[in-house]
Length: 151
Image: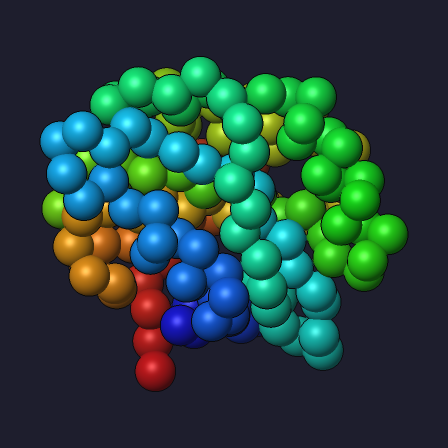
């Protein structure tokens, strides 16, 4: 799936999408899960190749990741040429939208992370099939801007 923001194409690769899809909360017994997004920069494109799953505290309506595991993952995948570009998690709603705590968390991550990115990504996998069941937003300058897929 391709998205555009400013003059950059953001491409969610097949492996990334497969991870997001496989972890959707399909029943009322599924708890939220999440992880991180890793990409390569290719010309004027951001190619998100991997979505990982990290350990954390999970409930039906929340996910609190283990920060130490996240940093170890960032370090390991950076050595493989992949850059941490954002986070993802699930929501038990058809067409997902970020909650207030989602927004606060991602804005804090953007401000506190050591990076040279103009923005970071936030993805939320909902119950509906993609693209309707996938929220993708960019976190920048104190706001989160929703992106829409294009062909």
